[in-house]
Image 1 (cartoon, rainbow, N blue to C red):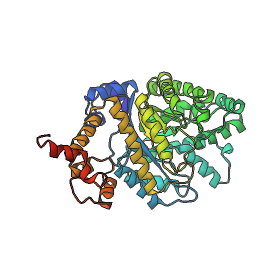
Image 2: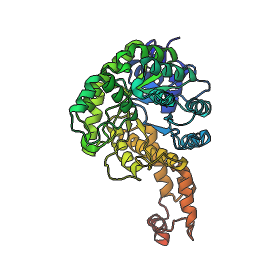
Image 3: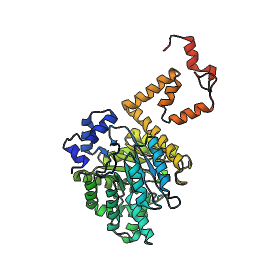
Image 4: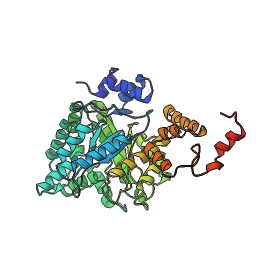
Length: 431
């Protein structure tokens, strides 16, 4: 069975291409050529047990948003994860990742797959590590077969995209050991592999056996999200040698994916100060052959725990404007605790705002039209329409209801001194 990228190279108009073109309001030919070139990915496992939305990520498309959910050792409740999933979907997330590390990971993932109408991603080394520790074995005792068995098992379940830290090589580990990073390694998957490589004095099995990974990915048409194990966890560490070294390797792996008929996107930082975001995005696009770029934030300052949904939205809008294609949300609980349902919903909304702001700046027609419709509704004092057009309609309605105005035409900020109302009364014919 041809993979999605192979269908594109053959010029086949499969339903996924038509669905993405309709959603984006662009010609289907642009989608096909983008996928064929590897500049667009459509994350969809060919054994997914339920129909999901075809989501296109990449050049020329609207910016997409991912929400991370998942259990931990301290809280492993499947019903809670399904509530988070529903909150993310209702807030219009485009994809969700299950990063579970507590409880029955297979059962959690099964429930999410059965209930999610949007693509699902995972980080397979998490499950491998948990399984080893359950068997009272440290991660350094992992075998390549352990890791690839997990990857195959998750693929069989229907996972649509997988984060694999294949660019973290033995050379990169040596650079970290010689370097002067404040935060060293902050990627959880990267830390697992760092330990394994350093202890065993062997190459990263995901890099050494990358062809084996490609065989599994092609069999199930899984999109490989090439992970950033060396992403900076402090703004002082941004754009340093280990980060760029990994990016160079990821660029090589992107080409191997395309040659094998496997879709690939590249993950990026992390913590990056504002003035380095443009450089980071342009480096990735150049080194990774314009592969779709998936960024966590980036978080632009390290001093705002409790508000990192905002620090990341600032960085996300800037990154998306310069070419990032996929924003992974960051919640206000980042660096502090596991997010609850409300933090998930809020994280998606804030990140959608960042994505939309970038879409407007990049000239995406549908995005500009949305803003124009809101402006017209405001000018006409059409409060019902304003609520409907709000990115978070329920919150907008709740705020207006909490302090209702005496005159329904206005709000309680300006009341009778509303500029629009005064101009309307002075110039009755204004429209």
